[in-house]
Length: 367
Ligand SMILES: [Fe+2]
Image (cartoon, rainbow, N blue to C red; front, side, top):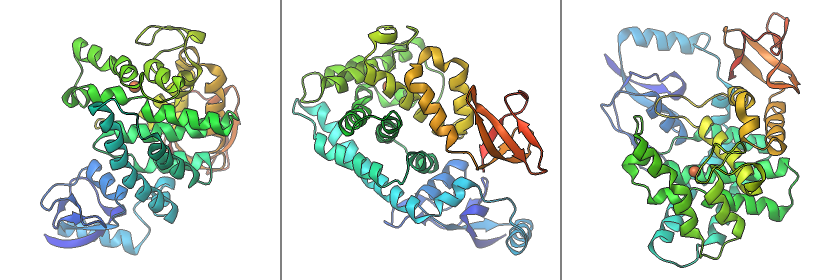
């Protein structure tokens, strides 16, 4: 057993860390003598750490050396490549700086009745929003970096940014886009009043606990209702879990009874939750998320907003390499308008596969 410095791309869960791992701000990210997990490796990536010293057996030394000398053990994925870009590193730094601002400004609302520091919060998300070249680039950057201990604040930033992209895709004006981004900032503020042990409970919630979590909508509205904020922002906090078929909460509203901003925000909120990693699963592939929206999304969400959302996300992946559930690799060639999650694929052997006609095969990863 010897100690070696291993590149982040070669680190695997189960390796034993030999030295403390620090980020550029000298904060401890992974302590020595812990066994690496997927989560710890993702956390290191988030902090742009490129390598770590780990204990390595003779057998692993041979494997690592041969993989470095010869062909890499596996292809570097699209998202792994993106993590190495300057654009990602800058975005990541901005995000890290934004989190404590959100925490401080939103938590301050719990202590008094003064108006929130809306200008500061809007500036934070607006700067990040405009630092991205395209909407889909923003989605990809978010996909690479979601691994935070406090999900409420990172979720609020992410949803606000996704609302901004969706507003652009819906051809909304600058002021309408900003309004939707504001709705994203404040929509889950009621969660700050729910006990953390229930909010972050890893196991199944009891009916009582679930009922308590659902109150974050009304509690959020009550926190916002007398503050100097647009009426739509307050209603979005109240209504973002309502669904068009009446199956949502807190009031079971249907269709046009739900405020428009809440209907748009609901799509961003659900997409963000599904594409974020959880302790029990990795982030879900965008095509899989779109497939889930196709199954029952059109009755739950307003198709006027959902269809452009699905079309724009899938169109942006035309030309990307993907992996199918049978292990084959191919390239997205054409998006089927009647089945966004099942495009035409050109496989490595030059065979064309129309996934809309081959229902046994589906995309599991963007490479
Ligand atoms: Fe919520």
